[in-house]
Image 1: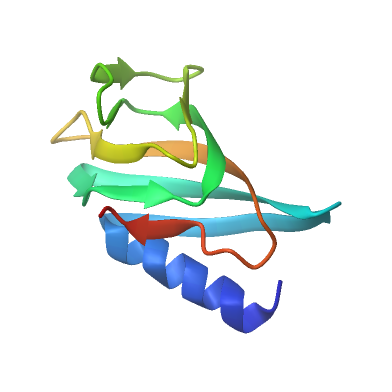
Image 2: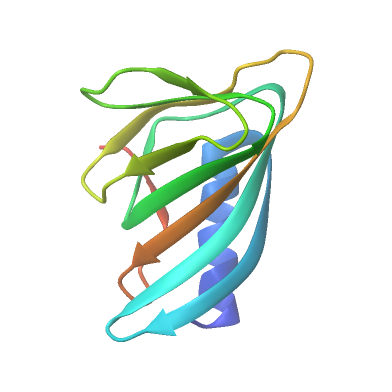
Length: 123
């Protein structure tokens, strides 16, 4: 993946995540696919606008608590060590820090088509 495309992907993710800090940890080409690992830190009370990922998305909570939901699914509150999964077809309707006083940080692991943006607005 080119540095320009990585910058565009991170900018799209940051736009979807209001008051969030997104840090890319690594990107690795796979046969016909690509993996990307990053961390997201939500400030107290922060949330993301409704969006979708062009990827198989695995979330692992590092600290704090987050609330997640995909369209048609149940809203869940996750703490450190808990996980969440989204398919490329899911619309991510809820993604927010469960606390208004403490930050939350989580690891995100994407598996996607090479050069595909990771995040897009929900349609």
